Image (tube, helix red, strand yellow):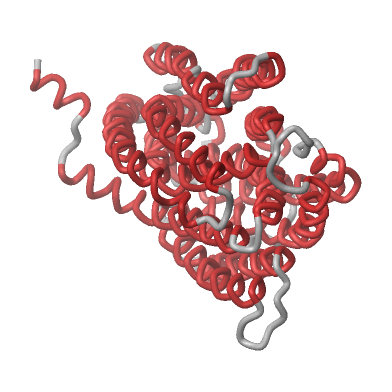
Length: 466
C-alpha cells in the first residue's frame, strides 16, 4: 500500500529538480512582489491609519484589474503552452497577439471606470460605524492615490502578456529578474518620495503611487526588451508585429476559452473585493486589519500557491503533446506537493501573524485584530491550496467554462452572500464572520475533488491545428 502511495504521489529526484527549476523563479518573483507590497504598506502606515486604509481600498480595485489581466492572458497561455508542447511556433505567436489585444482592451476599460466612478467605488468602503479614523480624510487620500496609479495600468498589461510567453516555454527566470529590479526601485523610491529623502519632497500617499508606477514601467521595459533581443530562445516573438492578424478559426477558439477565464478572474476578484466591502461595515479598523492580513498572508502563501501555476505549465505541455497519462501522473504528484507545502507554511504563518502586525504604526486594536485574522487564514491555507490546484488542473485542459462555474460562480453564490448576511444582519465580531467565510472553502474542495477525479480535464485542444 505504501509503495502504491509513493508511486502515485511521490516523484523522483529528477522530477522535483525539473519542477523546482521551473517554480522557484516564480516563487521568488511573487515573493519579491508581495514583500514590496507589504513594506510599501508599512511605510504608508507609518504616516497614519487613514493613509494606510486609503491605499488598501484602491488596491482592492487594482487587484481586480490584475486578476482580469491574468484571466485574459491565461486563455492565450492555455493554447500557447500546448502549441509549444507540440512544436507549433506560428500557433504560439498568434496567441501572443491575441493576449496583447485583449490586455489593451481591458486596460482601456478599467481606466475609464476608475476615471468616471472612482469616488463612488472608494466611498463604498467607508462608513461611520467604526470608532477609529476619519472616513472623509481617507477618501481624499484614496482619490489622490488612484489618480496616479492609473498611469501604471498599461505597463502592467504589456509585462503580463510578455511574462506569460516566457513562462509557458519554461523561462521563469527573466520575469523574476524584472520583478526584482522593480522591487528594488520601488523600495528606494517609496522611502524617498513618501518621507522626503535624498533631497526629494515628502509626498506621502502620492509618493507611494509614483514609486509604484515607475517600478511597473521598469519591469515592463526589462521583460519586453529582453524577450525581443533573445528570439533564439523565444522564437514565437520573431515577427510578432509584422502582422496583426490572428487566424479566424483560432481567434474564435481563443475567444471561447478566454472569455470565461477573463470574466471568471474579474468576478472572482470582484467577489473578494465585495467580501472585503462587507467586512468594512465594521469600520475603518476592519479595512486596516483585513489589509494587513491580506498582505501578510500573500507573502507566506506564495510558496505553495505557485505550485498550482506550475500545474498549468507542466500538465498543459503534456496534454498538448498527447501524453495524457503522463499529464495525470504529474498532476497527482503536484497536488500532493502543494498540500505538504501548505501545511508547512501554515505552521510558519501562525507565529508570524502574532508579530508582523506589531510593525505597523497604528492602533493596538487594529494590530490585535489583524493577528487573529492571520491565524484564521493560516488554518484555512490547506483548503485554499487544494481548490487552487483543482482550478489549474481543470483549466489546463481548456475547460474554462467549468472553471468559471467552479471559481467565480461559487464565490458569488456562497462567499459573497455569506459575508453580506453575517456583516449586515448579525452583531458577530469580524473574526467570527471572517472564519465562517474562509472555511466555507471546504465546499469548493469537495466539488474540485470530484471534477479532478473524473478526468474530464484530460484533453488535447490543439490537435486540430497540427
